[in-house]
Amino acid sequence: MADKKRFTSSRKLDHLRICVEKEVESGATGFGDISLVHNALPECNMRSIDLSTRFFGHALASPLFISAMTGGHPGTKETNARLARIAERFGIGMGVGSQRAALENPALADTFSVVRDEAPHAFLVANLGAVQLRDHGTAWAERAIEMIGADAIAIHLNFLQEAIQPEGDHNATGCLSAISTLCGEIKTPVIIKETGCGISREVARQCWNAGAGAIDIGGWGGTSWAAVESIRADESGNAQDKYLKTLGEDFAGWGIPTVVSLAEVAETGSPVIASGGLRNGIDMAKSLALGADLCGMALPLLKPALESDDALTSKVEAIHRELVASMFLCGASKIRDMRTARLLIMGNTRQMMDDSNSS
Image (cartoon, rainbow, N blue to C red; front, side):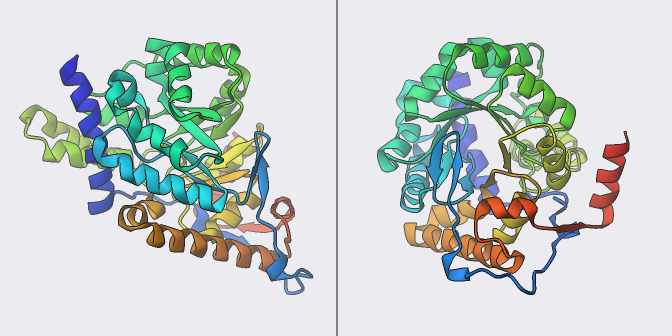
């Protein structure tokens, strides 16, 4: 058990390092096939555009959401602290990385709890894997929530990553039932979160029926955890892990593009968090027009988060400037106005959406 705990913790540092140092993005989100129709007479004041929104009853200053990235290793504590400080400063939401390592080893809990210390008023989301929920039940979810004083908990679905990991969990049976049980037993809102392969309308309906409070689509086209695990396997000193390098490369193209997943999930219910390859405020504006309530980003914020508070502040400000300009050019003075912004959808994304709707 001690070895398992150590592997879980060290894996967190591996993931952070690989995401910063290596090329880990794969695929096409579909945002390149989307154009927001320009409003030549916007009839609004760009200086007065209001980015504020609400999610689960919480007032947020912007729909930008700091997606789950890290925690679970002593070397990740300051990164989480910096992300939390920026969440507090800008009045935006934040999710933490999987809390499994700290649930297995409470000595690591401060790498997560630091986010509430640094962001006493922010909307914070705890994080637990569906397999761990199935194996350990509601008690682990409650401990994860308590650890950071969370306002919601994300149950993440990462089965492609598990399939590539040398130490991955390969049995997915019973996870939907565990999610349903959790939703019925706790008052804290439950978010079902994919981690880079997207969620289909069929799975979305299963999640809503199980009692999910929101869905974070985690679409294909951003950080590829198949690619990350392929790199880990290649770096491994264990010859038996080498075949996983090829397996990860083979599955780098597996998933539902973010735009397609967002459109499918948004038609089944709400609220919805768009994530998976969003890289700027223009992607955010497109996501809002497609029905997103929040817009999650991780990789674009990771490198500045490892640098300094000032670098991360500058990045968030740049994203917000892009979002404001996009809204202005759509004639949208408030976030809710983006729901009626007109979109042109072209290319492969249009074909995929048409095929999806006809099936």
